[in-house]
Amino acid sequence: MGALEGVKVVDLSRLLPGPYCSMVLADHGADVIAVEDRRFIADDLYFADVYRNKRHMTLNLKSQEGREIFCLLATEADVIIEGFRPGVVDRLGVGYEDIRQMNPAIIYCSISGYGQTGPAAHEAGHDVNYLSRAGVLDCIGPSHGPPVIPAVQAADIAGGGMNGVIGILLALYERNRSGRGQHIDISMTDGILNFLTLPHILSKKTGKKQRRSQSMLSHRFACYNTYETADGRYLALGAVENRFWRTLCSILEVEEYVELQYDEGRRREIVDRLRAIFASRPLSHWHALLDGADVCYSPIQDIDEVLGDELFVEREMIVDIEGEKGSEKTFGIAVKLDRTPGAVRSSPPAFGRDTGAILTELGYDEDAVDRLQRQGVV
Image (cartoon, rainbow, N blue to C red; front, side, top):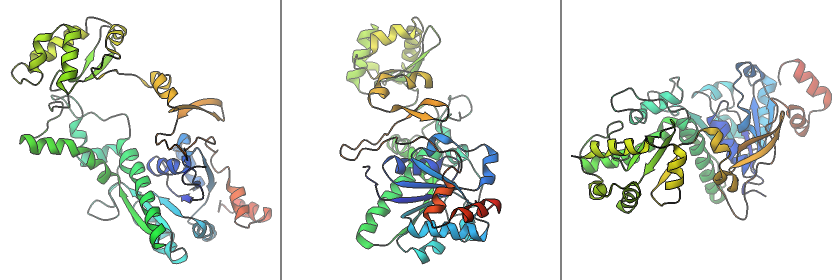
């Protein structure tokens, strides 16, 4: 049994932030029903992997009967998640105030780009916009080039999905005391802003703006940097503390740099020297030399290497799941509880697969389900 066994979640969201949030809840035992309008499958934006452990139904909320069906789901739910622009669910008649009238204990989580309030609330955006507005994108990339868009959705997953999970768990905990639900306002831009915590601290400490690839923890010094190897691969060093740096210098036979770790006058010289050293041998050579040497070394791996990495396999972060095309690899459960561990119990459902079964649970007979399908309600 997962820690959230018995918690019922209805997820109206699409794309990545909301579905990722409800996936984490489902991984830990919540009964999650994903609700989407069949019209949106044409956009090919059904990211199946984040629908594991859930049930999926189609529902047209612009129809009167569609709203009635949703309200039946909502009266039995503990949590509702939505990811539309502010005001959309209210216009559909399924916003927080609408649902609270019939279910005062409901926890209603809204995940949006810029939040439910403020001057940017209704602006369109995607991950790159949230990263740039929050100042995070300005921290990524070469010092003498443009900011680089990361190929991972940090704002969607960390700023939106993970903060959504945190908010829901906090509200569930508080409801145990008060018996009352509440509305949760998650802004992906708010969430990613917190990634500037250390750059902001360092700026105040040094009195200098943290510039791209020029900060203590971003390529400025040789001890915390990335290096290309002779075979075109890359490795990373994070030897911030002098004890790690001292060991590294000894292994690389550059002991003269031990006390010059953060020397501004010779910073460029040391970086160039290490670049030349690492460029002289392939990654396999450096991996054999540095792996386990306690110098904060790691190879820079691509996704195929990650999927086969014994670290993630042993920690069950790479697991096999039976999908429509047979067995495939997926990511495991990051939050590991010993008594009530989460689990990847079921593969992602086909779009709308559980519509009929869920309607039957709500009291609709077979003829009614057929009629709703013909009328485009589901």
